[in-house]
Image 1 (cartoon, one colour):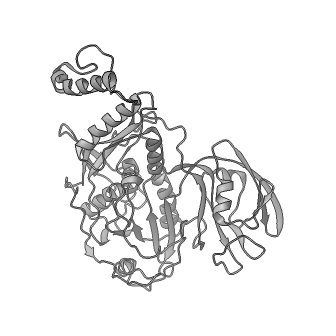
Image 2: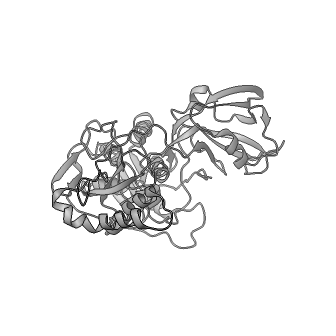
Image 3: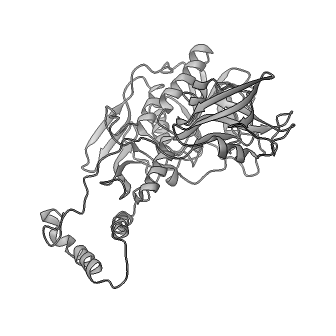
Length: 457
């Protein structure tokens, strides 16, 4: 992971992120996903299961500079200029710890004190977290989990969802994630799961299967499979898996490329570049739709990478620190779709926040894309995640900078208004997507063909 607040990310530092799963904007009712993930296009599956467990492993984190210190004065561990300010706090601390008649936990007192300080800021994006909360929240932002990295569904012979597993209801591998232990071991799309560690899956629900397959890094699991009518046995060693946040397809009778980013996890920029290259270079498409609806954000360096695929030079965003200093973040050279002949429509809504707004703001200010949808969420701050000394004391996220669009507009609390404002009417039938229809009309005026997408479980 990296520190996107610096020009050169340092893997030894904790990530600076623009949002997290705990503070994602309210979910906005969105039309059915118009495209199934690439790497096996137009995959249809209900009750999707990703065999991962939400626990972060091996993250390199900041070392905190904050500590209560040792008792050297009336207000121990406090700078000289803040001695008088902190005197009431230490008076209360000493009173509780020396005269309270009941029992108490000193660690809880410390945690409560730190939490109160962050609560007093009044910033919904700055907060104290216990050690477990910190790891779980950071895992949600990074998109890293532990498991084998495979999407599966319980299907009958027609492809419809079913339960429990039986002779007529099979667990099918729908998609093997990139760079996953499942892919390395040779698991393939279309494999049928028969057993887990020699125990038959018959009678299980899909949730039962997930519970048995997922597990911690380094622990193997043996799968009994059927592939093209032949039995296959495969042992997969679970590892840290990066969720697949980028999906793509070809729509509108094969004339338009469609890409969707669900969140800006740690590998989004490289995955996006792979799919974009496939559409533009391999497929030869020059009309694209980028869907950032309901994308709550993530790593700002990943937003910089995605925007750089379309912007040849100049600022993607500006960063203003607490001292009011401005830092320009320019596009990275070598973007795949910087040619202005490649037309782009960007879909946004009230669930598009933070890192997705960095991309939207950059493409809007530079005139590189036409924005369609409704006004975005409006989150214009960057957070630093940091563990407190010792790790067991928990950690925090703190808003340390504002980000501004290329034209130095701060969209915090305001959002970005699209070029074409088009709300989705209440009662829009499933499978219909008027915002995507408008994007296709803008690009080509062609017939709308919307593949069915995956349903996440």
